[in-house]
Image 1 (cartoon, rainbow, N blue to C red):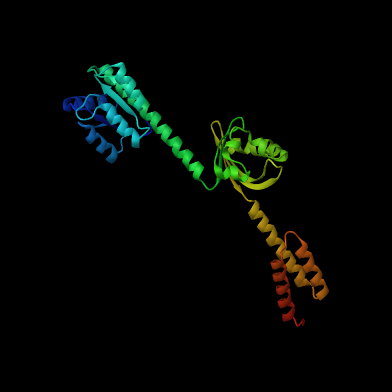
Image 2 (cartoon, rainbow, N blue to C red):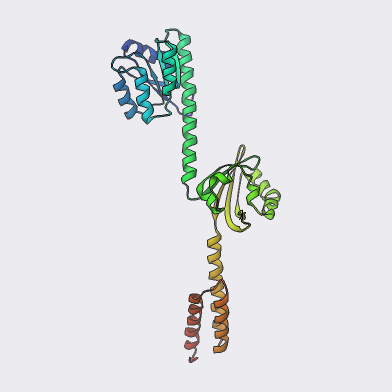
Length: 307
């Protein structure tokens, strides 16, 4: 019936004999269905709040509150939970009111096997759709709140879904990227690389991981780490902007180079010239140069060189 092994149906009707009959008939029609019963709306509300319910089947004409009142109450906290009005009260006015209140389905009562077969099928369809939508929403929320950049790309290369982190790397909003082709946001050499190298790996192994370049609207590029995973009709792309990390690595390498060069020199003039050179270098900084010079002085002093 669904991916669950059991579907819990809450049946609310003030006729105890009828709730017992309905439970028996539904479980005989579909062994995946489990029925819990309530004889008042208030009891039904309590069960919904305390039990994992997949679908509600309710009568219309009940004491104190009718089925529409029950539906309205349920929709306040459970806007998508399947709710089927199963009643002998058949009128266009009731049907219209039920539809306006957000009813999932409307079926007239009868005691035939065919009617219960219909009800079981309607429950199955409603619950299947409910769980599919629930999973879709959970997946969407997971993507939107993830710290990593995540995008879903269709077979034609079009962005179908993009989260905030992914779009932020391009200095854009998700709505700007969605509906565009990923190639619009990649340098030409990366597009060529994808078709000549990455695509074949993705097709053979269902995944690819490596570094690439992203292209922003202003023409600037940024370094990114990509993890691609195949889908039946496209692929998922998880992206991390590694530009800052790469910049820090370059700074660190430059500092190491500066330190090694200074330590190899034993002349004040050479040190001064090199220090000035590193200070002018966009990668270097006053602090880095000072640290390099200080390190050089310690090493040369230990060797007997006097400043």
